[in-house]
Image (tube, rainbow, N blue to C red; front, side):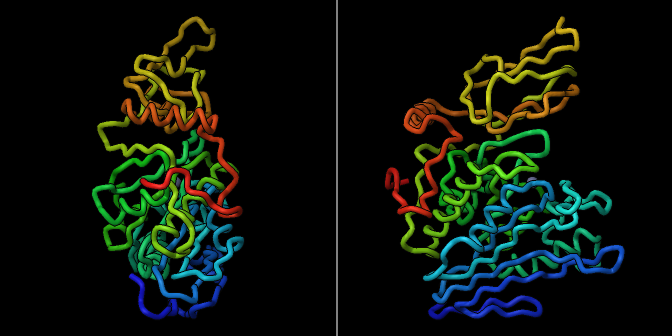
Length: 359
Ligand SMILES: [Zn+2]
């Protein structure tokens, strides 16, 4: 991956030399008034040779936590001694971001189903094409940040195709407790980039429309750990999260409401629940009828409903199975650190310490 000498990063119309940082507003489309739609991009090219990494956020315009992660890496971290190049794109879906909505406002297209994009195609695919060709394709690896859909919340987890050894390496390097393995839907940035030779993972964390400091700090630790794994910042240690589970399709499920009503959740996101435990109760307006939704197996609530109203068929929570060994490790870890959402002060600011050494 690393050349013997640091190389310039080039995109259509620009060049960033080794040792140089550029803030660019790059035009990917035009508005109804003919003004440019431009994404902010910061390219940090280190003096030393190394891999080229992209960090992206807000492919869904209302998913904000990742924006702050990408901006802090770009503008608050000290990249003296950086080996390689970091391409930071805090807001991919600019029209959606301006409207504070998930989809592109133009025919409600999903930018994150439009990659790698295509010239001469729909507006969404043309935007995706501009982003992809200039800033994704030249990269060796990538991390794309998301949150839960509006009205729900996620614990921090990685989504990655663990059958692909290079993607798996990056996913593990991020140091999350939970990795959900799948190749991802067609047209998603991580699937299409990974397929085309840029191993890419998605980070899911928290809710839409928020900056949630705890998640942002934890994700920054993950980015630093990934940078350590690929020797971008060779002195930083790779993080071992204390416990970890890799989940495939058979070991996870969305529990859905079978009745309409108002939902009282009995557990927070990140909770360990045992088979048969009522996770929530759905009641009618008179509280005369209620239906308990029980855990179908013992596992972890990775995502839960925040907006407490459901039609039959609406998702209530995303539960992943945990085996006995992982449960024991989780309990030991939480006994030490109190709760899933409590984090240590971000290590990249102080001297980072590896918790356990090995992985
Ligand atoms: Zn998303």
